[in-house]
Length: 292
Image (cartoon, helix red, strand yellow):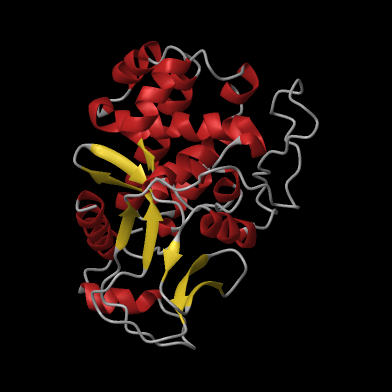
């Protein structure tokens, strides 16, 4: 939970498989300016209908099963991303050592400082775009007002809340959502504040425990504010596990850019184990998004 203060180059090597030592000092993500086809690609054969999703939906619809025992459907997500126009360098692969945690490796040497993957802009989730969409779906102002009374950092957390609601909207749409394959490839299990029990906090060092409790507190505020929106079903709004799944997706995969907050599907697979390198990579993402 406490990042080590290493150089970006040293940290980058932590991303590589022990069996494949590739020099990856800098990672770039590019938003492709051309609007490409962005449509749902049904996949995920292990997806089951969640009882928390409204039963009035068509029986042909499938929903993301967020149970921790369910495997992440990385193969369908990879296929979906390619169909949506994602481009990567030769040798780019998604890899795992335990079947649960996934990251990126390359089977070929790459040029330091060069791009490794290009992401079409329509695939990118943005708090600014989410706000516009949600305001058309219904009323979010009451939820934000309540969040402002509960959360002392509500002004900073508003964009995170918009993305949180956006992901819940897409989860409720099931495989009718354009992001369904990506959602079905997200982790189910987390070891952070919102996922901990009171006993877990007692086992942590004091400072880490305080930080984890603060994050759990913010999650609780989000759940309370969530009940004020009128465009999600009561079943979704009252499903704490589903809310935790959406909250953790935003918490672990979003980054700030010019006052906005963004999540880059497929780009988020280039994950780091320390906050320092994550920030370093996100800065590079920001530069490339703005330049395209």
